[in-house]
Image (cartoon, rainbow over all chains, first blue to last red; front, side):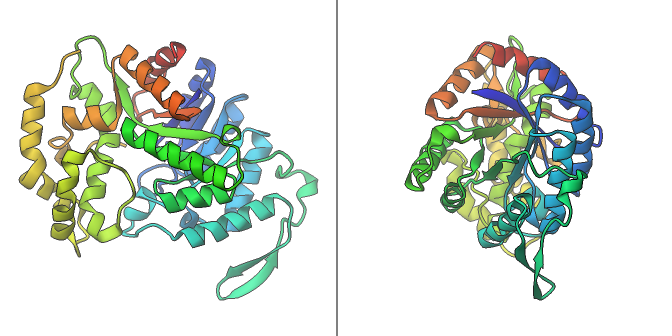
Length: 303
Length: 65
C-alpha cells in the first residue's frame, strides 16, 4: 500500500503538495468543487511546476463542470508540465453538484464523457454530441508539443455503489472509495474485486484507493477535541448530510452505522421536497442526534 | 472543508470514531493493515486547509505500516 493526500483545493495547494512530496507521499488528489474550493486545474498546474515526483490526480473531476474536450485539453496540458504523473479521477458528483442544487449526473452521461476524454487523449477522431448536433473532433496538432498525449493518464472512478463499480470494471479503471468505516470499506473492495474479475481485469493491476479523512490523536486526546473536530469533522458529517438529503438527491452511497440507518427514512420523509440543507441539519439536531451527541460527550473515550 | 457552526453539535466523538480514520498512531496503523489485507493498495488522507502539520502526523503513521 502506498499513501497520498486529498485536498479541498486551494489556489496555493502546491505548498502542501510540495511538502507531501518531500515526505514521500505518492499522490495528491484535488477536489473539483467550484463553489467551495479554488479551481482544480489552476491549483494542479501550480503543483505540477513545483514538484517532480508526486502524482497529481483530479480527485475527482465532475463531468458537468466543463465540457469533455476542455477536460481532455486540461489533462493533456498538465501532462506536459508533469509528464507521466497525472491521473484522471472522475465521478458523478457530490459537493460540486449539490452546492448548486443538483443531483449526480447519470452513469451513462459519465461513461460518454470518459469516452470523449480518453479518445481525445489517445489521438482518436471521434463523434461528439454538443448543442444538439454530432460533430467529429480531435486534437488538431498534438505533435507540436503544447500538450502531452504521449504519456498515459490512468483513469480512476469514484464509485460508492455497485452500478458504478460495474462501470469501473468494464472500463478497466482504477477505483476510489470514500470511506472511514472499516466494515463498509471491506465489503466495497470485495465487490469491486469481484467486478474486476468478472470483467477479466486482474485486481492486482489496478489502483484501489481508500479515500478518507481523519485525525492522528495525541496521547489522551478525545475524539471530539477541537483539533479532531477540525481535522476529521468535515469528513464525518458528510454521512449526515447524505441522510438529510436522501429525499432530495438520493443516496450518495456513504454507508452509515446500523444504529443511524433507522433514522434515514424518517429524515428523508421530513426533508422531501425541501432544498435547504441547514433545515435538514437542524432537524437532525432537534430530533435525533442531539441526545446521541450528549451521550457521546459524556462517554468519549480517552486514549 | 470545515465544520459550520450548526454542524458542531452533531459532530460527536461517536461519529468521528465511526466514520473517519481517527485514533492514536498504533490504532490507525492497525486499521491501515486491515485495509491493505482487504485489497486496498492506496490510501489517501484529507489534509485540511490550514492544517499543514497533518502531513507530518500522517507521515509518521505511514512510516510504521
